[in-house]
Length: 633
Image 1 (cartoon, rainbow, N blue to C red):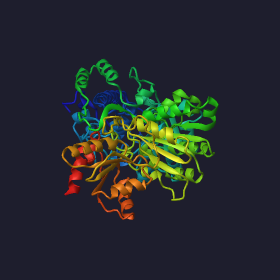
Image 2: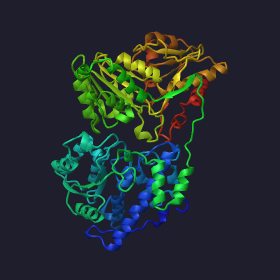
Image 3: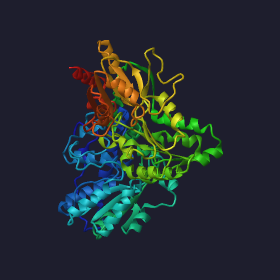
Image 4: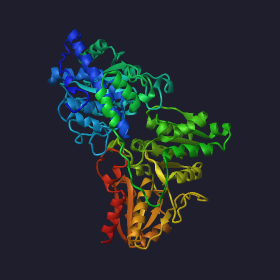
């Protein structure tokens, strides 16, 4: 551990015995030293993610260090009594798993300084089999407790712990897990960080009347509340939970990021600590070497220049909010209240919905991490003709909404949904946060109420799409990426979607003509495919490019056009098994069209980082060019 600028070798490997309910002065001092050591280290190495531009989460793992070091000492004292895994339903607290992996000798300490970097195998959520020492995959927020119930069923003679949070407890599957745990008297102990902070706000303000403690007590759990920063009380409650039969929730109240000047109690603590705040913290704590190291961390830059695109880049996820504000600005306040309701799921800043919240708060509902219920609320509002429910969250969470989408369709609801963070671009959170199964939303029958999937290619097209489809009836799903995208240019160097461009739902768009075949792409894959097309043309290979902004509607005219060409390659960042390419070949064959056909898409676990995800999957311009040449033989 000598190459890590904070001496993790100073970690004291003490043991604790749950049959002893109080701490000796010596044990208390050792625990306090361990807590401070790990908190300092977490601030440092998560801040390298901030410096590198890949982000990360500091507050959650920083907060829960006291309970983690207590559990670690308990595991060491009586390993046979426990399942010695720090199961955590707040998956973004991955820094906990990584630092414990180092302390357990599974990877060197200096590896932590590559936190969330591409190909570092330290993604933003723990992935089993991907990172040395990681013992479980957490998936998304609030998914672990039901799983841990099963672990407890498999190890009835042992105590199983699940680190939780007031945010993850908002997910509905935790309510189901609570009922099963109580009914089966499972030996599951939840250690919950209740810091009253989530990404977009404070639960006590946007979910007034709710209480994690009262909710769990209502399900029948024994609940032990206290101050998470009072070490003696925390230890006493944890050992009381161990010695209490059945499921117990140890709820620890504390401000977010206690002791970090500039972050304590703030929603900003949920994400990664800024380099500025981290430097002040580390230098105040006497970690000059760590501060000096942090100053030298540089963000990698993608130096690629993409042919056919402009140097103007913007985030479509924010443009969505701007476009909705533009539509709403044409309505009176009374009309907005009557016709439109926006239901957020704690991600308004990530999905562009904060633009609507700021401009027209009368239309906006700040809600919690309850995607299923929030989508259904938006759908219920949009049940009547002329009313529009608006919903937004990450595309990865679309998989959780299948039943609710079906019910919305059966009830002829009008919902405009924005799923940002679609695909894989800029996804340092990695595989569990890939938004690649978006076609699942199109799960109705042929004669079902209208459902269209839209993935605009650039900011100008996003604006045009929203303006066109806003008042359309039915379910409309609009996708965008976490990353910024450039504006697409025509052959004359003008904005393709500028000027008098009008979006036509269901219509494919010829971005470039070609006689040697066509590439079909959409979203953030389009500008990469365009770069490949332009480079191929310079080599004398005349490949055309089709943009398919309406993903699930067949444009018969365009399909016939490209189906008569020598080859067709579908390029996308969606799942190879479930994306556009999985059905496009069938569309061609059903019409007797038999060009050479291939499909490249996301097909393997991610590599972390940002733009690096595209070449990792072979769907960057180089990968596209190679596939075209392979098809040509």
